[in-house]
Amino acid sequence: MKKRTMMVCLLMGTMGMAMTANASDEKVIGVSLMNLQYEFFQDLKAGIENSLPEGYSIDFADPNNDLNTQITQVENFCASGVDAIILNAIDADGIVTALDTAEEAGIPVITVDMKPSSGTYVTYIGSDNYLGGELAAKWSAKNILTDKDAPKIALLTNSSSSAATLRLQGFKDAIAEAVPGAEIVAEETGATREEFMTTVENILTANPDLDMIFSYSASGGLGAYDAIEGAGKEDQVSVVGFDASDEEQTAIKDGGCYKASIMQFPDKLGETCVEAVEKTLNGETLETEIGVEVGVYTADEIVYAADLEE
Image 1 (cartoon, rainbow, N blue to C red):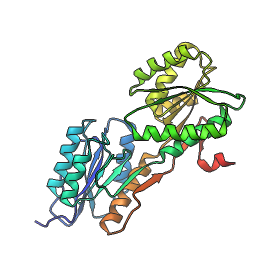
Image 2 (image 1 turned 90 degrees about the vertical axis):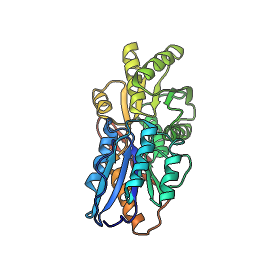
Image 3 (image 1 turned 30 degrees about the vertical axis):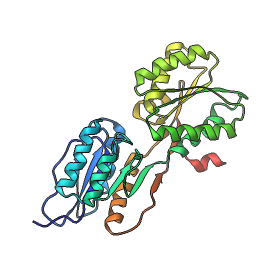
Image 4 (image 1 turned 60 degrees about the vertical axis):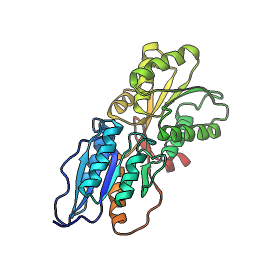
């Protein structure tokens, strides 16, 4: 039985262990995606599968949002002799021990969508989160806040997400330039749609003249949507989300308070991960971070950065 060249552990989140590599010269990529129950990660998985070159196979694993399970999956990838790993880490700090295991085994790791806080990996591939926040602000300034000199804005985030931090920072920087009088009256954290609904209900009570909510995620945006609709303020408060999930797109097309959402392209993220694996195994040097473009999903079109520079 021939020994595989290198082990590619595609660590991207959650997935149960699939079949291990066979005993040929075929290169095997181990992939762990945070949670395959979500549309985003299903599309990411499809992007990886659809762009796989000839001579490569994939060993998928779904940790289902459990860090210890994901660490074990990476260890199993390394023990089974994969050539590389694509990793969507569940926890930026907690995954470092798994990265150490892959480094000791000499297996290159391509990280995606969640950037580890430390440890050794070839590159981080993600949607340009800062750009996404900027686009949300610039689009809102031109389409929601045009007649307001000092609009009041609330932000919804997740304190444990580095992506959320970048998205909000991009929004804050761009809105300060585009609408100098804008006031951020609240910045609240959460995780689920239900949590964000309750949070926004409280924000609306404390700020009856609120104009807009920007959320780092679909769960936050939809929770805000529920709260605004429940309060009967759909004609006063606008929502811009992030992810452009199917449910967000439906709400946006309905023409209510949900005006837009930043659209990521997870299939493109998956394709870029496979390209990075190929280049790495061919001995090429990659940038430490690779950003993938995002756009603004609206009821009429998808707006890109170049469109907002006009």
